[in-house]
Length: 91
Image 1 (cartoon, rainbow, N blue to C red):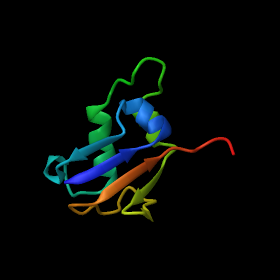
Image 2: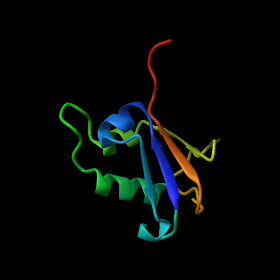
Image 3: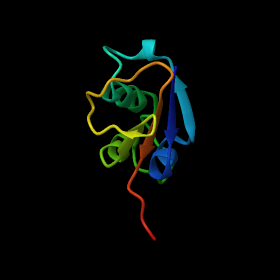
C-alpha cells in the first residue's frame, strides 16, 4: 500500500488530503510516473473552480518518504509515503 498526501492545489484538485493505493493497481512497474498516471485517471475532473490534477502535477515537487523524488522513473516501494507539493506562495 502506498500513502499519498496531497497539499495545497493538489489537495484542491482531488478534493482529498490523503489517499492510499495498492501498488498492484499500477500499470507497469511501481514508479512515481505510474502513480501520477493512476491519480490522473482517478481524478479527471476537479471540483468547480479548481485546475485539473494533470496541470497541478506538472508544477509539483514530490517527496518519497521525506526525500526528494525528482524523476518520474523513481521506484516506489510498498509501505511508502508520497507527498505531492505544489509551489507555495507567500511568506
